[in-house]
Image (tube, rainbow, N blue to C red; front, side):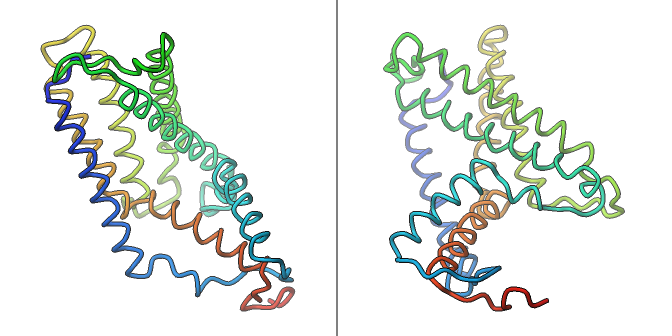
Length: 251
């Protein structure tokens, strides 16, 4: 694969983007996005356990229930259209979630285990062996398809039953993710059939990648991240004996 840019600049840009992201999230958290001391169990009775046991169990519940199963989405946005088809949004979000994870893994396998032949030409996933390129391409393609299928499920019904067609942080993240996937596919096609257009398509794709990551602290991605943290604190607090603000059974 040949890129229209020196690979050293790609490395520097990647580290710079990561640094900016860390700073942005740190600022948002400092402003009070995540305040563990103000998180109480939503239900009781609380069970007093040791801190180590509570930590392990709460973390396991968050990973399995909130992340891998994405169960909270079953109760998310139950108004209007989704109250009639409650599984539509959850299914779409699961596709977004696993598609995004596959794209990240594809990028990691392609660029962490690559071998640069020249300053701009490299062999993706070279150090993963003969199957390395197939793994990278397979993860990228499957992840991209998951995102596009999720979008086709989610977007046609996004504003159904709503009079205010307002674009939200959720929409921004999803649209940027979709455009990142689409331009990525176009870049793959250009590398094979339209090599003269690779430079233009590459910069368009990189622009969407940059926008996707640089806006993460302010879009739905941050809400999903903070929700996981809130859920962990809630479960941990419940297991260590912290009482809910409203006693169980009181409405």
